[in-house]
Amino acid sequence: MTTRLVSSEVLSASCIQFGTSGARGLVTQFTPDVCAAFTNAFIASMRDNFAFSQMAVAIDNRPSSPAMAQAVIKALTDAGIEAIYYGVVPTPALAYTAMLDNMPCIMVTGSHIPFDRNGIKFYRPDGEITKADEQSILKAKVRFNAITELAELTVDPRAAELYRARYTELFTTDLLAGKRIGIYEHSSAGRDIYQGLFESFGAEVISLERTDEFVPIDTEAVAECDKGKARLWSKQYDLDFIFSTDGDGDRPLVADENGEWLRGDILGLLCSQALLVEALAVPVSCNTIIAESSEFKAVSKTRIGSPYVIAEFAELGETYKSIAGFEANGGYLLGSDISVNGKLLKALPTRDAVLPALMLLSLAKKSSVESLVRNLPQRFTHSDRIQNFATEKSMSILESGLQNTGLLLKKLGFENLVARSVDNTDGLRIELSNNTIIHLRPSGNAPELRCYAEAEQMEAAITLVEQVLNNVRLI
Image 1: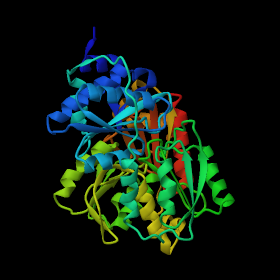
Image 2 (image 1 turned 180 degrees about the horizontal axis):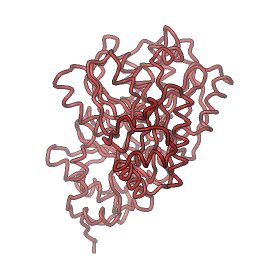
Image 3 (image 1 turned 90 degrees about the vertical axis):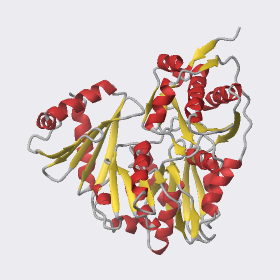
Image 4 (image 1 turned 90 degrees about the horizontal axis):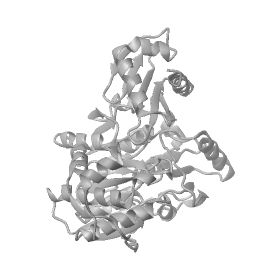
């Protein structure tokens, strides 16, 4: 006899919650029944506002992702929904294709978190789900059959093809003529797309360190070994540019002619300038030179996470024609249709890695990436994290710091400085009396405490982060 389950009960027992980018948890928590519970609850929440009979599904290269997709697709089939499986593709490729087809979609990915964890991202026919949608999914009481067998997977290549065409149609085939571009492929979900894409613009492409083992690249906290690799590759292969992404291909990681990785918010700023965007929405953790720039008519600061950036688009769209947003991790969100080289680029309100890289390269045709960065106001940011740091402890530190900021500063080693301002929009962001900024925030995706810092010299920003995290460990 088939066992009947209730989605809300299964999800509550799993202890999986939504973070800043989808539902995340340990691989062991994403059992077939949990995947089915999420799927059925998502179907129910979407049917309140949309009519559909198909749903798209894709995955990243994590070892656990295929089995999770099989459970999702079996649940869709049992619910009478036709599943279209696009295989391993970047999250923005899946979202873009599903939006064109006016259907919801599910991406099985844990993005940059370690391989023993995974996650699921959900998209409405009009883009990312909202925070209200997340709660609707968790609370839905949908009855469904327990998963007793997994679906077979047959890949449709259409999403990869449409995503590639989205960008090849924007520029001439000589955009990158004479350029040598390295692609740090590792286990990125888009690694089978990027080489052909850059070659279509005339670049000579060198494949770098492709591996079948999952590599958790965090574009906000680039590992020292990856910094060293980029500098070495740049010299070894005489590269003009290095391109990479996180695991699911929605956050870019790009390096200049010297193999120096750019901060994601600086990449977003340069992309926005190249696109002639009128208004921006960016998280509070981004570099302050963005909000102070005279090139934008409006810059709204949000909580950290793409849902908050996207939520701000609605208000900005009432006043401005071209709107966009980006995060400190580099993911670029295009909030409105926009013209590029006289051609229409459709809005894609979810994080994307390819657009900011191409726009930066188009700007650099007349100069260099290094000079573009150097000509910006010299204000530097850095970030890092403590992994396996209990969220409860992070929250306790932030709460005590909000109640007594001076005491927290002393514990962090700032005895001779005072807080000029305190912002708790997302975490605890403190502007110090020496014109530097420190920002503590628990990750929304894993038990990690992140620290962001901003200063007038890069070395100072790095030192601030190291000092804060070293002292936090002692609290």
